[in-house]
Each structure stands twice: as C-alpha cells, then as structure tokens.
Length: 308
View 1 (cartoon, helix red, strand yellow):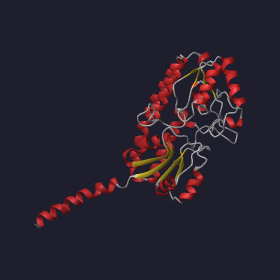
View 2 (cartoon, rainbow, N blue to C red; view 1 turned 180 degrees about the vertical axis):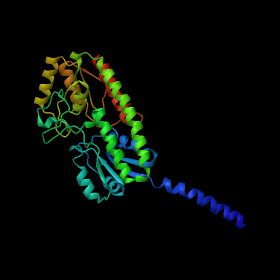
View 3 (spheres, rainbow, N blue to C red; view 1 turned 60 degrees about the horizontal axis):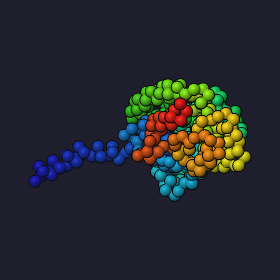
View 4 (cartoon, rainbow, N blue to C red; view 1 turned 30 degrees about the vertical axis):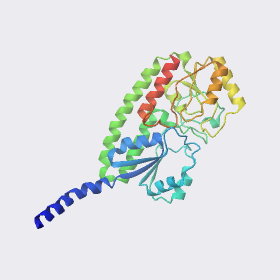
C-alpha cells in the first residue's frame, strides 16, 4: 500500500513542473488583430495573446468594454501600435490600473504624413520620410519593412518580460523575419507586372500610404486616415472626377468598411469594384486573411487581378 502511494506521489512530482509551466504563459494583450498575430508569431507557445479589437473590426472608433479593462489589468505585457491609431488605449490603460509594461510596436519606423495634414485623396507616391506634421499615418504595417521593426520591438519586449526564454523569442523572430523577406520579394515581383498607367487605386479610407510609398502604387480615398472622418459630398465628387480624369480602373472596399460608399463611387465613375481588401484588420480564421502574411498576399492578389 505504501509503495503504491509512493509511486503516485513520485508521478505527481514529475508531472508538476510541466503543469506549472503550462500555467505560466506570458499573457500579452494586443490592441487589434494584425498586431496580435505578430505577437503570436514571436511569442510562439510561450505566450497567450488576446486581441482587444477582433477580426474584421475597426480599431479607429472602437469603444472598450469592461471585459477589455479586465484583460488589460491581468496582462503581463500590453502591445499597442501607437502613432495615434488607438485613440482610446491610454484611457483604457489608466482605467484598468494595469502594472504591465506597454510596448509601442511601431517605435522606430520612418513615418509618413497622414492625410489629415493634407487634402483627402492625397497621392501617396512620395518616399517614406519622417513626418514633420502632428498627425503621422499610423498604418505603418502596410510596409513589410515596417512589420520587421514591429517584430523586433515585440521580441525585445517579450525578452524583457520573460528573460528566461529570451532565446526562444529571438529564434521565433528570426524565423518569422525570414518569412517576411520572402513576402517582400513576392509583393515586389507581383506588382512589377502591373503597367505604370494602371497603378491607381481607390480605397475606402487612406490606409495604404506606406504600401504606396514602398511599392509604387497610387492610392486615393474619400476618407482620411481615420474611419471616424466621414466623406462628404464634395469628397465623393472630387474622387469621381479624378477617377474619370485619370482613368482609374478599380475601386476596392476594405473589410472594415460599409461597401455602399464605394459602390456608389464605382457606379457613378464607371470603375469596377475589385475584391475585398484588408487594411486595419485580419479576416476571421475561415476567411482569406487570417494572418498578416496571408493578408498581404490576399491584397496583392486583389490588386493584380483588378489592375492587370
């Protein structure tokens, strides 16, 4: 009887460390789905990631819930985009009382000016220089080079929060950066086939400035960098005139947007409506863009299919 009890105790002693390890995953809270995927790629099995704003949802005008405050309060690490993208996050952090460190994933990227500093429908064909204005474009992840900066910042933040596994986070980040290098080459090769005269695109809001500056497309939008700014009749009329004048071949509806505005613009301008594209959020797991890599590839396919 005693031998049997001793065996059980020994088995429990052996199993206990594994059980404890499973319960000590780093709890990371990211503000929106694209950022949550990058955290998951770097964190791997050692990090449990929660996204406050889920797939196919708009982070610009998000209203946090009491459940969000609880998740932030319980977090070991909070990851934000910064650049004014989440206007609600500082209030949420204060309300939650969290003691977790907050890392800004975009820290160190070369920003470009947001369209609130200029007219709506700004042509993003300039280079990715630092923005001097008060409102930089926050959609920095639309350039793969910037996504690599995000990954490095996330790696360093996880290593600081969990130094015992810093080597794991470094290895995950290096492997994922290699995948980003492959993605970058695919985008550049894929877009090279689009004739220069066809490289004009209309999107719902001004969220592809970094994509334009990096990859040589021209994007126009009736709304500014935030979906909180509504496009008025003059904005819509100006876009329609520009489509007709420049012979813009296609308009695209973003996954987070009401499609009716772009359908109206397409109808009145004669441009065709391209496939749904993803700017500020991933799709749901069963959709075409459940990860950052798949999102960028889905957008590339949509642009090529409409413009070639």
